[in-house]
Length: 117
Image 1 (spheres, rainbow, N blue to C red):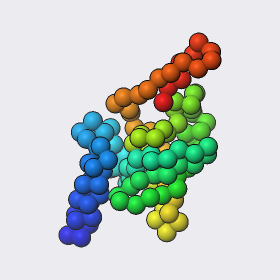
Image 2: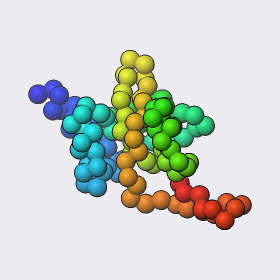
Image 3: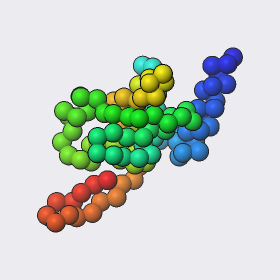
């Protein structure tokens, strides 16, 4: 019974941050595999502040995500929902995937290529 109550608290917190059916649909498979969901609050050069379940975690992307990224838009940005493994005793989150974005901002840099956030 306590676990159900904890899940309700987590989902209420997630809804307050903008979680909706779109993200729920994309997260289902990961949830069945035991992953958690988090939202990127701060993006630093090589780490992130991830909000999950009402807590804050220092996050890092996996080597696989680093290797497979073809551009900076493949990395988590502020506001993104991400698939994470949480290590609560270390206050750490490992970021495995970025869930699809509903919206994005793009701007042109000094070159003709557009930069996506």
